[in-house]
Image (cartoon, rainbow, N blue to C red; front, top):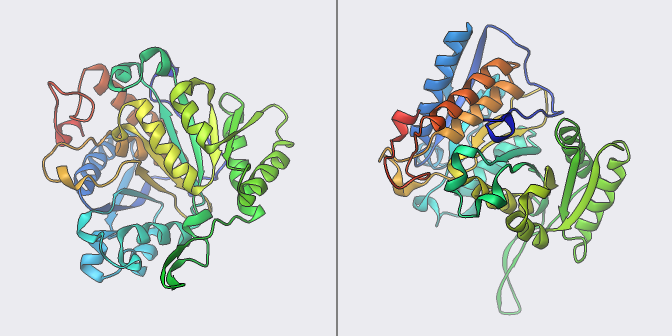
Length: 369
């Protein structure tokens, strides 16, 4: 198949955490639900590549999310953060589940994820959505709409309404009142815009910035700063879309997009929508990167799927592709990334499918890994 229709490499301006070496230490965070199963598949694939290419990986497991709550009553213990900082990179599976949904906000798995991103300076989330020829029929959209789609969603990860203050629920005028703050500093917008433009220079030289500048002051600042940053990239075509229009355009004509850059909450929603162009969240990897003095965190875009945990029905490919991004971005091992991506393509070429990709003749998580 042409390279554009296969799992492909994506470059970024974010610096690598380490230079190429003979032995790496990687922290794994299996988390909850199907997490331990998909992490196991990724470790198997990574070890096979490392052995073939002559380097070693030391895997160290740490707790996060519900598993950390059950063990330490903390969704992201300091010991986990310390171990992550001491590692060359980190591979996260999935967190959360109904078991912890009624906990106070500070004792929910998702709070641990937000803490991890903030503490490690992971301000850029890169989510490629590439429609593979082998999986065109897995999408609910028409083949002529999605064939050849190759989008990189660049989501700002440590600002916006998820982190803005003040926030809370209190009583006002005799009724409950909930509030959050959508906030961005100019510097936060500028640095994520730079990541998007640098990526575009190595791809199709198009950036679509997504905001809600027609009604939100913070979005007007976002648009103004992105336009200012674009001046340093005259070769890149910059367009703007309001988030509601962007959500519609992703379904109507996704091939118009190359790099999309947006804030935290809009990116959270749009990147999940983009996953259905591919056919399944089980195929979408992601990289959370930022401060080059520390490791990045690589994780599949899907959740913990507690309803299928332990049934061997999970798809490990997004986690394996996330590991490929880890090799490429954090560990200076592009040849290892190429090998993992080639293995995924080979499995799909051979007709191997997990239950999220097909209804008949499917295989389990262990066999796919």
